[in-house]
Length: 294
Image 1: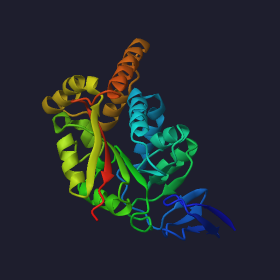
Image 2 (image 1 turned 45 degrees about the vertical axis):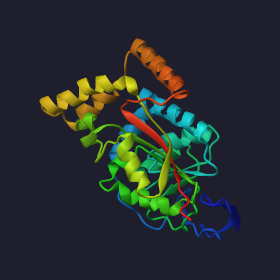
Image 3 (image 1 turned 180 degrees about the vertical axis):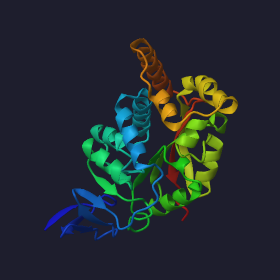
Image 4 (image 1 turned 30 degrees about the horizontal axis):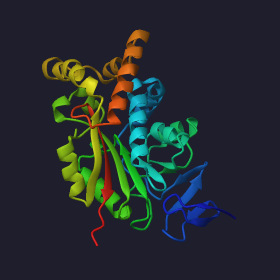
């Protein structure tokens, strides 16, 4: 009989015949092929092959690399106390990055293919399942993250309500989302998006479920005009491209000179974020805290 610390409340509990049940918060997981699983499967937004397509480009994409670095800067400033559940974390790209940076991040993902990709990436602490399927007492999870997840819900308030139930007062929720409906394009449709957000709409959603904003800023500000020209206008004016052709164009590697320029611009933007919040960008990052209503 072995024991381990609970992924939710950190209490030490026993593992019996591949089954873990926390004595404090009732988190219940079964071990299968070195992966912890919750009881039920839930809706998966991406096709399994989409996860493979992303897995092929995440490590080499300036967009994914820079988003990770922006997330890290924000976490350093608003540090989570205890474990951070990366909900809907896909192939584990962010989870792995945060684990290597010293954060106790836990990947929560329902897709079997994404889980296999995360294992190949050597992500630790993986739970296969969704937040809805995981059995745990209210107010047991210390911190949650939704990194480009919320836009995939046609009713995002359901996810926020669930997280509000599971976080204790002062528990933190870290969010990144695509910004501004003005930038809606074919990429959003092919990425299974329902929404793009701005500060006002995101705050309205979170405030309605017991959260207060403690930080928010746009980022990828330098992509705003190029995205309008290269994505939005063609979407509104010209015929639509096939999904694969569009994906291939989006992930096409830049030449070394362009890569160097983009890296420098990203570095400057991250430096600016240390001192101020950006008023415009193609993505939005925010940190919320659950309000104690008692």
